[in-house]
Length: 196
Length: 206
Length: 211
Image 1: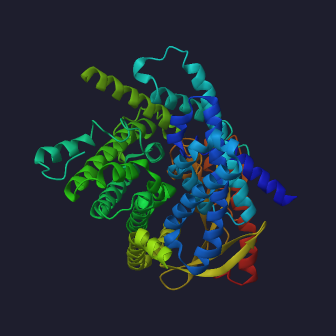
Image 2 (image 1 turned 30 degrees about the vertical axis):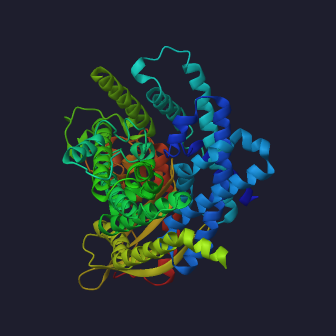
Image 3 (image 1 turned 60 degrees about the vertical axis):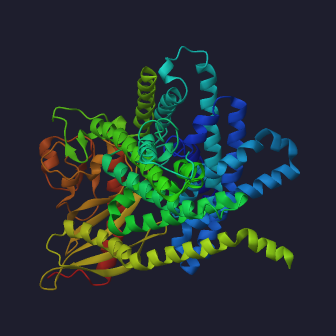
């Protein structure tokens, strides 16, 4: 029961309290670029969730079972980025072959995801937080993806309405999105301290 | 960007200045936003991050420019990534060895330079097509522009959230610090407003 | 055979580059590794030194003290000029408002009084919870100072304090206003760790009456 509670708390904490976009500033580039419409935003979010769960798990396994055992921690960053690039390729091939309809809805985002800082960032944070168990790494990775999806969908909803508002010329596009993201970050700060 | 036959000093100057304003990586190209928001709570970490990015940019541009005729098209992104990852690892080791406190403050954002779009974009757009000297100057220009941007953003945030710049007290004692500036809110809103300002300036010029 | 040849033809640069880069990283690592390890050791030592000013050296007193819920910590003995033990220091950690708080706590040689604490790492709200790291006596932030000289045992957090209550050195600690949770976290860390460490020190006979 204890394990389940820990995992549940870890999941909630990374989705809401330590949301990758609003507290750790990860994934801002796609966040600004793709949050124009809700369907695109959701597609991007799902693609990110897919890849980040796979990468987070694989990098944890490689780090704990291979790199630390052999004392090769200095090659950590190189290994991580290679694993992530490989994972993205794998996911793209797999999805294109076995789920063609799914590929049509979010396949175009997959190549963009390799340079998404959220993926590498999450792998590094899992390393920084000294996560001990594989299952916790899986839950955290999945939660990070869900958190990103939630953040990007909220932003897409707001932006669809912003299109109809009277935004000053100089602020159209990225500036107003950033300011909105700031206000969202402020709102999400209210969740801090929820789990002690 | 240039033809390989006769790069002139005018071209060098243009390349160098482009990174500072006309093609400023953060304000105009909207690249590298993640570290811009994350490390600009104070000027010291921002400056350190800027220097790391300059180091990695210059080294990776040198290597890519030297290899540019040997690259196979479908493997080039992998080569770029490998090069950048190597130099970021070296930069990280240097930080940990010589400025450990700064390394702790910057934390995981140093290895995130690997996925910083600026470096891969410059490798792809410039270094893989230009001779060595042009690539180096482009790297210096972009790096300087990035560092300048980070420092401007960081000075505003640090000034308003602690009354100090580079840990030197600037604001009078009566100033009540705006704690929000050191939190994510302040980061997003300041960058958004700065981008708006840059848009106003560039539109009034053209 | 031709397939392998084709493969090598396409990727020879990659293979050569991988070796070259690997070599570069290995060289950098080998030359800087000692320095990095020294930095990590120095960090803890410097913090402990700032709490116990007269200490010349720190020795590991007890390795891996088991605190409740599976956390362990090491206890260091501060050795003075003449080789006598003048205090003990240990790292305590616990959940704060935003994230984990790590403190270095120092007690005197007989484990009777706290000598103070320093924050190793914390992520509390800037301007509010972050005040647990400010050590400026006589300012309006008087949290850290209250621990110096407090009896080494159970400390209690109270919320209302007039100046005479704050200045009195006893086991009642007045919380930082508007940062109750962070203050409570610090007090909780003190209480969780001190009890067990005091017991272990007594068991191992490291606290003597002449110390």
